[in-house]
Length: 292
Image (cartoon, rainbow, N blue to C red; front, side, top):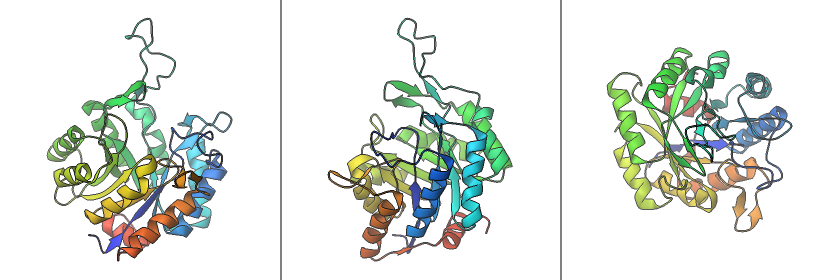
């Protein structure tokens, strides 16, 4: 088990809606404020998506990302920023002709998916390795596109965070490490609880963790009601912890969390009661090999 545990807070994501949680941060101001709240509660990393300010739907708008980053940095220059590159990989086959993209398709060129990383150069940039069924659509991240995005992320000076949803994604990561596309020690996030991916169970998370490179730094989490059980399981297996409204809206059964800060506080309380210490941002930077 880690003597210092990094807590990541995923503050809004791209699937949770205000129907799930009326306090979900949507505007850049709300997202930045929620990141600062999570930092005050003990998160060393904030994982950032942005939303369309009118519809609340996922957005890739550079100026939204820029505003979030500037608002955070105006008040907190220590917290580690992890910005997603996930949107832009979804394919919805139309009903009449599955070869024709339906209206929920968001597929775009890999270079477009990392434009905001080039412009803002965050500490960490998420690099999803999953090609899988996701709801009623398919998320497509081909090895070729992943290579392109990895090269651009590396050139921007950001550290790729490798999100894996099944064992094949870990094999792909190992191939990219062997080819020199990715550098060791790599940073992984094991995602559990997404249907048709890793289920949220101790044995599955343990299996996934054992398949990672021996020098990997990793975080594990679960979605929905398994958020806190998988946070504890990740710590017990030697990993770090992630919580947040992207993954779970509830602080306990039937009771909505007040916000991201309360979710971080609960995770911190659980981990500290097991005897660990929570890593400050500076300590987390050393663990992850990031610039101070």
